[in-house]
Amino acid sequence: MTARAGGGRRSADHGGSRTGAVVAGPLAQARNGADLVRRAADPGFGGPRTYVRRILVETPVVHLDELTDAQRDWLRTRQQWEAQAFSELLGLETDIRAEGVALVDPEDELTDLHLPGTGTVPQAALLLTERLVEHLRPQEPEHSATGGTLVIAVAVPDGLVDEVLTGLVAEYDQRSYLDDLPSLREALLDLLVRMRLIARAGRQRADGEGLPEATPKKHPKDAR
Image (tube, rainbow, N blue to C red):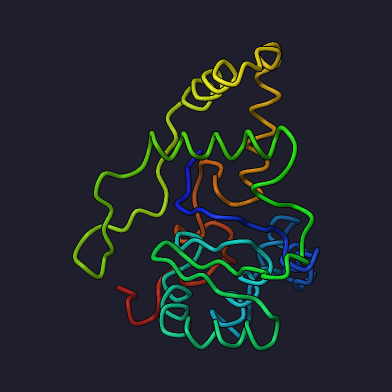
């Protein structure tokens, strides 16, 4: 697991659909199902512009490690113009951070998944996030523009989630949850992954994960 930077109220799955999951790739060129999905994710002629705009609309928040160098460069130079366009066309507010970009629906109409929210799982997920931040927050995070190293995510050590959950259960006198702590943990992590506050450990798009073959990871000007 990796924990993401971020805070505030989040809404997920803008518009109730995720067009990135719709298979629209070239069937004749795909070798298998996985290759077809990768090709369907290829923005084609639109390049970084199409991909970045699509993923911004489809997801609650986009972190920089989910973008290739070319996509990061496009977003960095266009983010203010894109923020204005999203506001005028979709009524969405753009929250631009060093770690990435989030689109916020001020009318709160585009989703039925919220954080914070009511019920045990959303409330416990928020408490879990707060405690993980306390444990894992970098001491002196800096932006690369100032000569520092930008921290987008940090690894969650094995056992830390269970340790924090056990403490929360005892603190809030909910010991009945100790009988099925694994199920509670999975429910909380599933919600946080869907909200993109936590990511499953593994390679990111910046590392070439999910890219069609022969797609450059770096911007052409940075290629060696």
